Length: 134
Ligand code: SF4
Image (cartoon, rainbow, N blue to C red; front, side, top):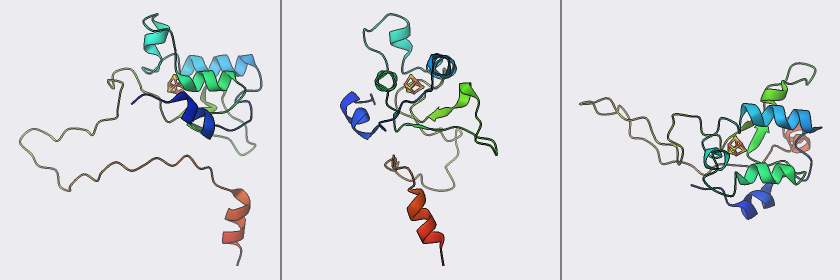
């Protein structure tokens, strides 16, 4: 399924995704530069690329970009600053994620649940503290 620009823009955060161009270029080289969603644009087959990249160029942070790993001081690797949940790795066929097929001549142990709707809401730290307080 393609990403709708207007919907993605509406749910994005109004803060720049990167502190500077080096951060942005490093992250995009590691993620978007390998992603099948942007491959047709990278290869000159279509005129528009991934809408999430465009949103980040509008000084916003797509909701689909979740924070990557941080150390105890909050430091992160520029190449892994975010994890894009829409990333499609080379070799996974692009498009919609598909369930892994059952082995031939075998039935699955359990029925597969229907895919759930993805949640883009980030946790509210103040509410989390209120819930955790006795
Ligand atoms: S889906 Fe994510 S990783 Fe892929 S091109 Fe778009 S922003 Fe980059």
